[in-house]
Length: 464
Image 1 (cartoon, helix red, strand yellow):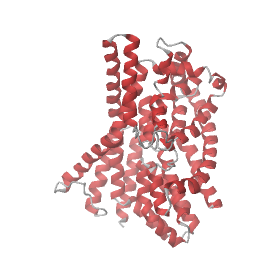
Image 2: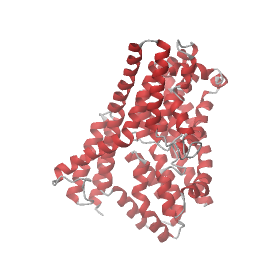
Image 3: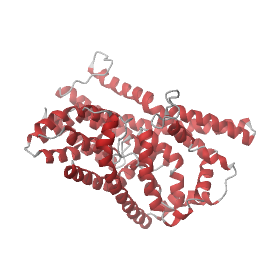
Image 4: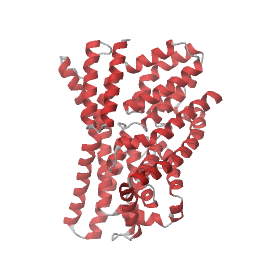
């Protein structure tokens, strides 16, 4: 393992972090850093820099990896994120969001005096939904379309509303999670058994602690921001609050449209099982179905084909805006992540930690912190855990630990680190749609998540 490659990767991480702090264009900065690390990985011969379809020369191979990253993201998550972003813009255009806020404010009026309590309750509700919709960015955007305007209307800031939405996707848990599937395979259990026997007993108390930390953290940051930036606070909580008071000039049943995709995904989820195995519904399909149904309602309401087509245009504009601000950043962050992996950054951390003579329990704690930080750097819980995962059974055996004692905290720490990463898909997506800085949102999440990961490690080491 090349120490010079590790030092160079640390240098690139530092330069990139400084550039992001100084508000350089994140897409360009992450892409350049990733390309430089991939180039360095080729010359240092740490890992082979080879795309799925090699071109025959390393120069074009590196660019080909960027192309394949674009294609894989567009085919996998990019279209889904763009569709949800377009749907959010469409809901705003037809004032369905206003209808949702107007309807919701009546039963939720009692929370006007306790807005941060209402925001915190979103975390466990969102975690339940995450089990049935195991896509962090997808669920985050669905909650931005449905829950976010209600929370802002209750009086919390945009950052608080977004932070609890991100917190709803903290734990990759449930049988449908890719990280759960890998962790269960490493332990030799089924997904369901791993979820019930190992995940839930650790996730439930950690979630309660995280809810408390997010409650007080968001109150503190909002209070500080009101003092420093009165204009921003007024924009964040005042605009939608005013719109929630007035009855929108659209039928009130339009309030159902923003939550329709989420309802469809839950009803047709394999974990609900009402229509299984007859119907298999994906997020993009649910969004497009809801879009076409909503267009029908708009046409019936306006009785004007031109107005309906103009409303349809807002969907395409929303898709374009999300591609520009979100999808491109996800691609750039994945190139950055590939650079770190090919330079052996994760491999070096694992091998060095196992050589310095720490006890088994201490190394388990150190590994959990390392993978938490790795997920922050790479913006992906899957990438961080999938890099570590295959090594864990052997390391656990060497340390004399049960395999689950090492796999479980690392699997959960990886998804927690994602919510504190300014380049993670979930953070970029919800911040982009809401029009706030992903760096600021990640910074807002960092304090309660650090407290959460410390509690998770200590609780696990005491109870396993």
